[in-house]
Length: 342
Image (cartoon, rainbow, N blue to C red; front, side, top):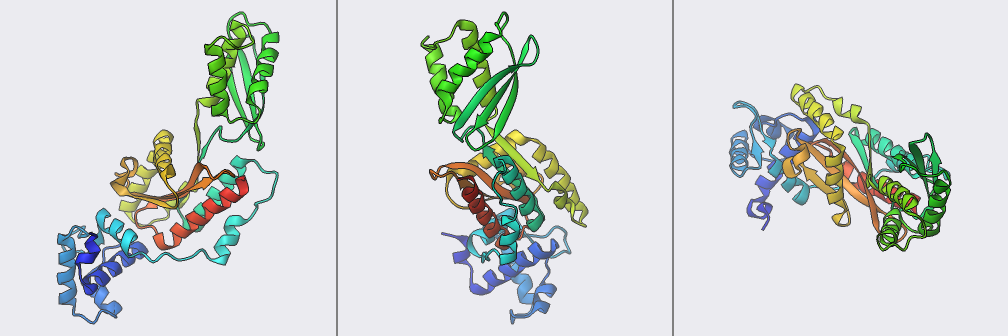
């Protein structure tokens, strides 16, 4: 049973107004402010009693003895899940997100542009996690750059290109680079990198690979290096997070930007958002990575033509995000990505 069902309409309305005022201003909300706003038809003393009750329930807290109230993380979660009235994406916002959708652009360019536009519209940091190796492969080539090094070039069917430098096996003849490329191209075309890796490793393990040992080692190194980085994280618009006059907010933003540098942990968070359909919201310490910076993450998965989730798009910002506006915008952005990448 939700805590909202156990409180009366007046208490619920006062709680809603406190949270909405906090989201708008970032400041504690007092009984006088609520009383002057009108519409409650109760005295400031009654409002104070209700605020005290909501504080006892763990939904509000007072940052200072004489200050008004602010929502706790539990309060924000309750508001988002039970009281939030989600809006719709305006026509202006739809056009801004969909601009420059032209063909001929790489997937990374499309994702980076959308993350930047989403960041600008929401004044948050835009995030996109793109799983690498999901697109069917087209071609691979080994290019020797020195006696000990070679460049592995992987071209996906959607036009994306991945490059990696690998160490060459000692004593490898130049012809082995061509042989390794031919071997891989015969097995990876039309497969994802993960599928190709599985097939190739199986053949080599069972000694069914039609190549000698040195070439097989080169193939293993090339495939392992290309598959080593399973996801690509794109972050755009961190500077928007600094648009605050509050010293406390600035300190949290500094911590948040440091957190964003831990890309592995951010990718783990966004992987969690791939578990189901629709928008996912992580508030404050619900995710350990951003617990200290007091941040919220709003993300939604996007899909390929087979309706498989292949990545996540969203935003990160302070917990007092304008959830009603941002949630549908993130959802719409995921729809755009899905449409463009099919």
